[in-house]
Image 1 (cartoon, rainbow, N blue to C red):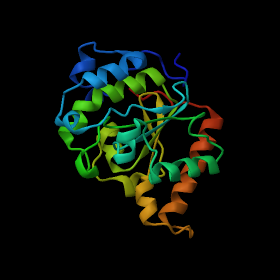
Image 2: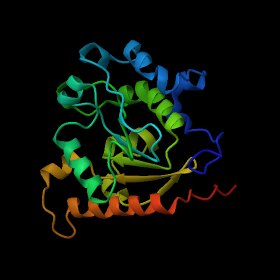
Image 3: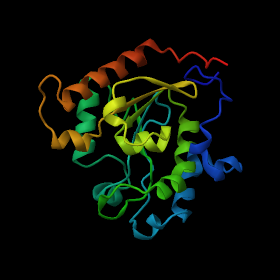
Image 4: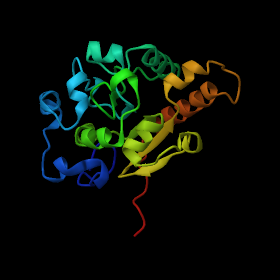
Length: 222
């Protein structure tokens, strides 16, 4: 059994794996940094300072997935270290989850898009094998998808974050929870009941409860 209770051989979604993983290109976390540094599968590599792989615990049961690096992340080589990342850390801490000890934090794309724009579908597809390596190697019980790009990059669902946030989705033997991106919460700082920030706090409390339950989703019905 995998550490999240899923069958260890349970495959990832084919659209996420991409052609490189389908061909057996599985460097694991140890080789991921070098593989991403050498990657030229899309044009983002030409404008980056460095690749941004992850931070946190690679043995964590919670994986947080965002969109892509911004300027501070591109400079530091670590994801979610700017204002949005600081807010993410604060909100996770408010439900008892230290992002460095109890989460593995990464992005859909590993290189900064120019002017912090949204990654294109082609860029996300080019980087999908590296994200698939991370998911397979970390094998988290829960994926926390922050924002519409992460939702699209993992589940292939476009533009559904407002409709799907706060709802559990069983996926490949693990639970998936979409939430608003912290940058959206920075633009909507109200904490009143029903506000995006309040809703996200409820979502994170539900994530913490699900981690305590430690129950994987039931197998799909054939």
